[in-house]
Length: 290
Image (cartoon, rainbow, N blue to C red; front, side, top):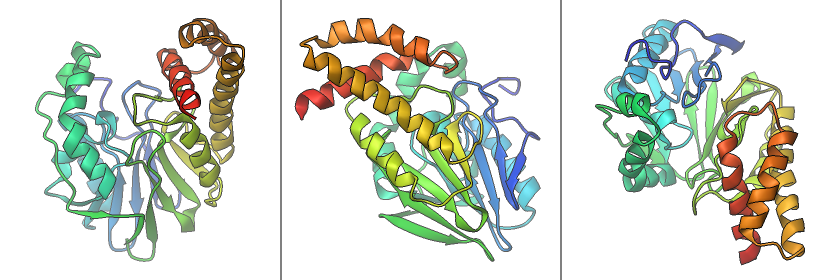
């Protein structure tokens, strides 16, 4: 596993603001952007990657950057590639999630291990030895973490990608860790009954109200707040195209078959086009239920 491309890569961090580091995903599927935020007295780790081996890398890199400062850990949402390496930090860091995220992990974590194992032998191998760990503490709504000379806010925004979505706001540095609620040229996973396309659009509008100069997406390159606008524009594009076809009396199968290739062509430089169909069907389901 040490040579797996699914690992968060050691030694690749960029300091995107004073004391705020990002280990980039390198546009490798199922690898997240991982953050380390330093304060005078403590350091916060944001996400761990999917495997125990990735958790080991993140812990070692956090220790390298933070020195002997105590560590805290939070996960942007419960999906495997973001937080299933957390067990390797459980004895070294105080883990803080929102309550909904902790509930999702308890109720659906094992199910997602089995789902991700179907994604191929390399993913299945990465998940070997995964132990699901609950946080040491939970919060509702929002909470502030005092790192010493720097306060980081965890804010619950669930209901778009997962029920327990959260963002991490480093206000003094103008940095927003958005998790998978924002992606950079990756098609979003608008998946199942939990994800909600219309809610996602509204959530992104609310994120624009958080003053930030730098946005760290769940996947893809770090950018400015215009990234939120671009991502929201994609979801609106799909929503409006589905609504137009519903108005013409087309059924969901016809809409998916015809609209999917059109969306792929319009967003030719985006990755993971297999998720376009899920977005189309999600918007159709929500519009039909309205």
